[in-house]
Image (cartoon, rainbow, N blue to C red; front, side, top):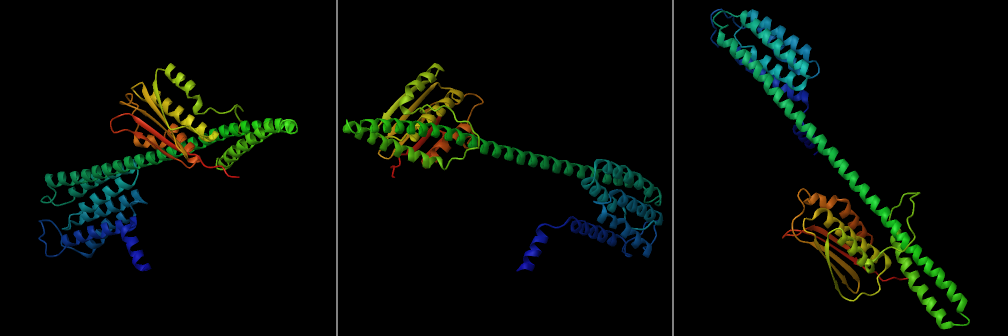
Length: 399
């Protein structure tokens, strides 16, 4: 089995030397057919001799080394060409020259390619001059020179195509790396922002706990009912803060990142001010609420607000229609927000499928939902417009 795999590997990816050897053997075989004694000789041509076979080998063999030693291979081949032409043997020696010119042009530098073109053309002209008059006709010279030119042009075309494909491939790989780095950077920046906002929620909760503890301690002897209320508030706040702390463990944060304001983060109850802001920017917003709002953890409340804020910002930036609808659905175990806008995008701002996956705003919303283990979807609507939907679970807080 190992031997079979090795054979497949060799056949699937042959080495350059193996390819060159195959071409050289093929060209030599074609010359051997022409050197056959049964072929009719033109007036002035000589019969095949051992020297003719040696020169034929020297005409073909340089192709094996043309990748590494292009000029030396060319010199050996053209010298053998002139010696072969001086011997006036039957087999046409131009084919090895065509093949070598093609190989040097394809695999060597532009300078070496031009040297091969002009040197081969000059050597072929001199070789034909050494032939008998019946062989060295004008048509034979034109055919030989055209053969060299066609071989050179064909190799130039292939090399240009290879260079272009290599450049396009390198550019595509570079763009893919830059795209991946941009996506990772967007994820990191968004997680840092989430970390700061969760810190705000927890700091606010701890402040409430501290104040209620002080109140309970102060009135526990004289007003036990008020002390119980303080303890109940401490219990609810501490459980909520514990939930947010657990979520915070999954958020990466760089050392030394400056924490923002310690004011409580905005939530769904602050949508009125958000709607006012976007309406001032020219966007008409309709808000529809389904269900009865119950206890919603601060982190979920804040993330739902931020998702709506980001989606409406995208509508302002990308949508041609200045209208958007916001639906908030309160369930027993989740909060679902859906933001839609109708109509086409602004010219030049159509959202492609790859932008849906890699746009910074979409990545930020997706990361917010992923922190809570929720569900997120964003994309164009069949009838035009765009839709963002996020479901944020409300996990039961346990001690």
